Amino acid sequence: MELTRRKILAIGSGTLALAGLPGLPAFANPAQEAIALLTGGAEIGEGGVTLTLPEMAADGGTVPLEVSAPGAVSIAIFAERNPEPGVVTFTFGPLSGSRSVSTRIRLAETQEVTALATMEDGSFQMAKAHVDVTVGGCG
Image (spheres, helix red, strand yellow):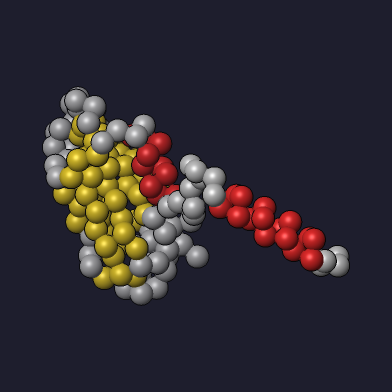
């Protein structure tokens, strides 16, 4: 393909037109998109959720995680830099003794992990923790 002055001007003006369109997300975070989809855009409070992760994980393949949220119906865990940001969702029934979980997760690299709890009244609570991963566990 021969690049003429006319083609370069057409490509440049098309790029400027696309950049000026409102409402187009510029490389949105997949974890934030998943959280927005789950909450339906509702306001998310902070507090009410306790998320415990190590500050540094030597092996991203087995990172210990503890999360609790008294009064939660479900707790979803998101890792923003994993190939799939939705790690796991725990659902609690009315006869659950406690609304807490202890498990291990995989993290691809150093990143922030988010716990989103759906409460019994339909509200949402969130907690975040940063984990430095020295050897990734997803690749």
